[in-house]
Image (cartoon, rainbow, N blue to C red; front, top):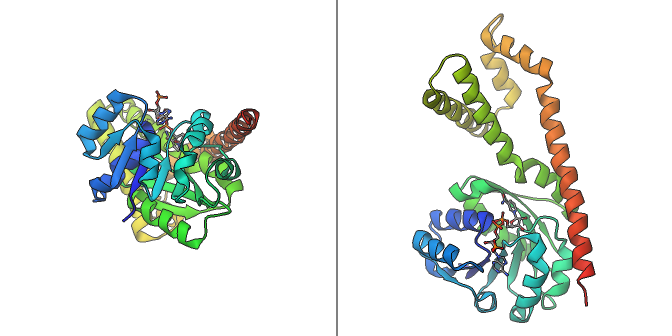
Length: 277
Ligand SMILES: NC(=O)c1ccc[n+]([C@@H]2O[C@H](COP(=O)([O-])OP(=O)(O)OC[C@H]3O[C@@H](n4cnc5c(N)ncnc54)[C@H](OP(=O)(O)O)[C@@H]3O)[C@@H](O)[C@H]2O)c1
């Protein structure tokens, strides 16, 4: 069992922490830090882990460090914790757009670094995380990161240059599904259902359909054919969806998020370079 330090307990750090503790990970082996005392008090009360404002002490005592601060403060955070990484803990960075090389360069020589792009459903053990190992992260380090991150969902390994695509698809992905659930509920209200009933049915339909794809192992198109009877309701709905170009709309959204991720990554890399002494 790793001794874990989670640096930054905002949206993503807390989602990871919640998923980790929810998976049965021993609370005594987790320390969470933040700059906001009120956030730390909330985290301690809710998850029962050790909390503190001292990143250096937390990193010093950790075998794995999870960096969950905003990309803008990554450089300052890395510079502050660097002297505490001489024991070479495994460092997993959630920070979007911050290159592995920039992180490696700021930490003690030989520190293994893995860049990860998780998503918010990690909170309930339903996360999708992509990992890209750095130059000093061998197979053992990747295995350790996977073992930890698999506690909060599914993990895939990609090359670092695919991280923008991952951000566009699964990093941003929960938003697409939240909108689909909300739109389906609105649609139910439009055709005469009470809001509460419509939301319950919309949510369960998304959950159930996803679970069926996952558990059956069948291609979604095979399942689509099963529910599309000749001259029936599903084919009428599908015709309407195809006319609106729904597939292209989703592809455009993923493309837009991917491109924005690349743009932001360039700005962040530039700022990290500009800040060099
Ligand atoms: N949110 C997502 O869905 C998501 C998904 C994938 C990856 N990520 C990545 O995860 C990271 C965190 O994102 P987030 O949305 O969770 O941001 P967030 O909600 O702003 O959380 C970051 C937390 O870290 C605190 N912090 C700032 N400086 C710190 C320091 N030196 N030491 C310890 N804590 C510090 C922040 O406090 P202040 O608010 O006072 O600054 C805040 O509480 C980002 O790099 C992001 O790219 C996020």
